[in-house]
Image 1 (cartoon, rainbow, N blue to C red):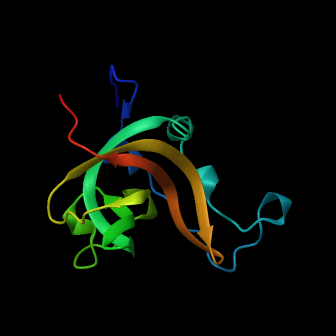
Image 2: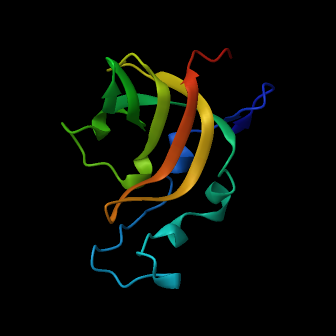
Length: 144
C-alpha cells in the first residue's frame, strides 16, 4: 500500500486477497446479537483499518447493474481470470463498486477507480455477497 499526496490510499488486490476467507455455511448458527454469520472475524485487522478510507484501486470490471446505458454497480477484480470463464474467485478477490452517476463499461483492460472504501460483510437476501465495497467518485487515470 502507498499513501498518495492527493490524500488517497492506493490499495492493491495483493493485500485484499492475501488471506483465506471461508464463507459461512448458509445454515451456520447466528453470530452475536442473533445476526447471520458473516465471517468478518476472518478479515485481518490491518485490512479492517482501511474501512472508511479514501482509496484508489485498479482492476477489471464485471458489470452487475445498469441504468440508462451506464453501469452503476460492478465487481472490480484483480484479473480477468477471476471471471465466469475461469477460476471461481474468493469473496475477497473483488470489490463491489457503486457509481451512482454510472460509467461506460470497460472490459478486458484495467481501469482505476477512486472513492470511499468499506470493509465488512454485505448481506443481500441472507447471502454474503461481498466483504469489500467502494462508493466510487468516478473512474480516472491516476498520474504516477
